[in-house]
Amino acid sequence: MLATVRSVSMRLFRALGLTTLGAFAGFAGAAALLKRAVPSRGDAESDEVALVAIFDGAALKSRATAFRGGSMLAWFGGIAVDLREAKLAPDAHLSVHALLGGIAIRVPPGWRIESNVHALGGGVAIDAPYTDDAEAPRLVLDGFTLLGGVAVGARAGDVAEG
Image (cartoon, helix red, strand yellow):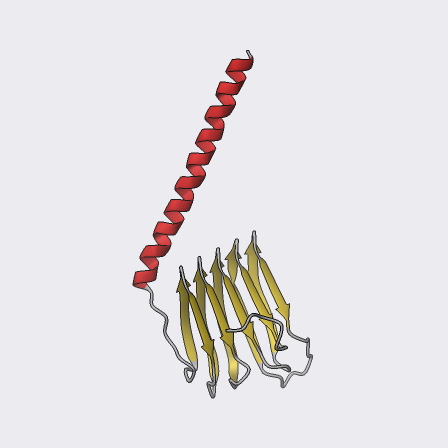
């Protein structure tokens, strides 16, 4: 009886391990293919960016005169964006997605940050002081994290150097 229980539990353990390994290999393979197909767009002067960090990192210090937003995808990688020297356009919107990776965004004090980012097995940290000033520049964040994270900060030490 004990040998049968051990045999069944060992088969279950092996099946679970192989399934997990297969899922991870598939996830990593898809990321590698996407890395070749989707390059980053935008530079320090761009008003709209599309940053992609797959198996590597991306950093941007924006000096845009009317930053409208864009998209960011960190998949097994990281993105660091400094928007403290950028001027925000009305209705600025960033779509952020982190899958086993992270996104760190620095904003100047006084910006209103509205987050609609959802996390599953990860986290979202918005550490910008709240302001109810209707005239303050507003940045809206949408997206999700899966085993990853998004951090937005207004002070110099809030997010990692980029």
